[in-house]
Amino acid sequence: MSQALNNLSVGATVEVPVKNEYQSILGQTLVFKIADKNHAGYPANSVTLITDKIIALLPFDAKEPSNSNSDRQNYGNNRYSYANLLRWLNSNATAGNWYSAKHAADASPASARVSVNPYDTWAGFLTMLDDNFSATLINTVQIVVRNTVTDGGSYETVTSKMFLASTTEVGLANENSIAEGSKLALFSDDTSRIAYCTQAAIDTSQYSGNPTTSVAWPCWLRTPDASTAYIVRMINPSGTLGVSSSYLGSFGIRPVCNLASEILVSGYPNADGNYEFVWNAAPNIPVRFGGAWKNSTPFVKQDGAWKPVTNAYVKQIGAWKETV
Image (cartoon, rainbow, N blue to C red; front, top):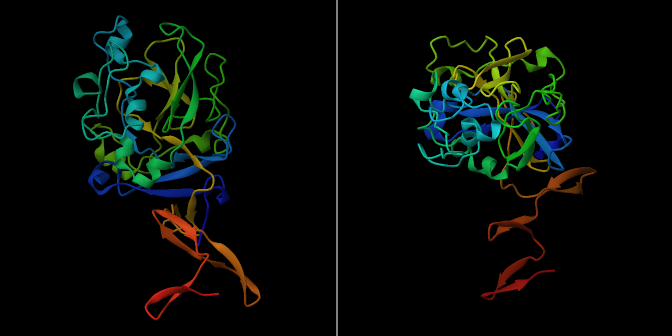
């Protein structure tokens, strides 16, 4: 028996299958945690998910050798709307084809331009996930601060299906006194922000100082340090606010997304404690039987859609005739 995603409580976890050819990068499944429901400023009647763990260690953005700003030449770009990471997270492209320049000085996260863990040759993130899941992601508008050094200060909006959380959304300080959205229900204190890596993230990483799955690890936020052109805010292993240079590839990511509240999941968690998405399931209709309400499914699939059975027929003397 299935149920609506919205029935699950904040903190419940849901599994998303990873396609076979990409399991060497992400593992067999990704586990998402419900971070909020009907979150202010997000799409109406949606459920917000964030990966339960750090799913990869990657640079936020690569060095930009032709940028007129020397910091961005040497340490990468902290403008989220230009970030390599944002493009990769939202790409359905095949291996090596997700990157395209967003501005004249932009550069891909190839090995020569990041400290470690290049990903320019990877397929797009959405390509790696179950197609049903990727197809149901809802476009979400995010508020993002701009630095005061090169980008004019204030803030801008970015629309995407997969994104990184902001300092505001995880319950940390507003950058430059600007609220980038509002706090997600999942985050209440430093402990709630602490994250650990999946085994796949560790196995895929080329960083010499990789952690174990039991060691808390820093992860990127989308918020820039507003006083620089290259530093990005992050969550420290202690759950407090930290910073680092964009091109450094030893820090983790926990993607966020929104799905419609009515999407179906399993009625009970699996052996790993996670619910599973139920795709293309026939609708359930409760009927009274033996003094109790039970689920009935009088539907058939026709032309790719589930339709109610309204007529019954029997074959009589070589012809189909309607029964009453």
